[in-house]
Image: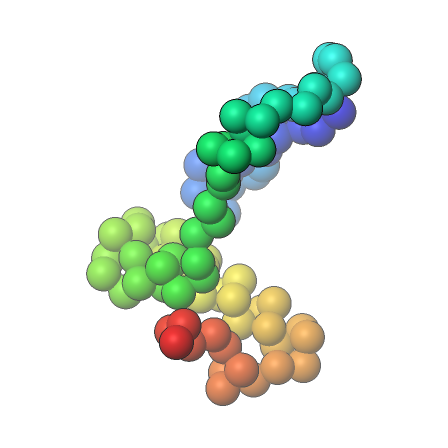
Length: 86
């Protein structure tokens, strides 16, 4: 149903590393409804990792380039970039 891709570095080609396939119907489950939650990383936490040097340089540069390219294509300026959550 879905193919999963990754890059070894920002400049490398995408490589398929797996696939996700639904093989049965969904089943309601109270435990999962009440206990299973997924948390997406806040963008500002990603930026903090970049600033702290926790990411390799090529990934750090790619994060900033992607951010600027994506936002500028949408007609936004640097002042529109996210700031810390209140």
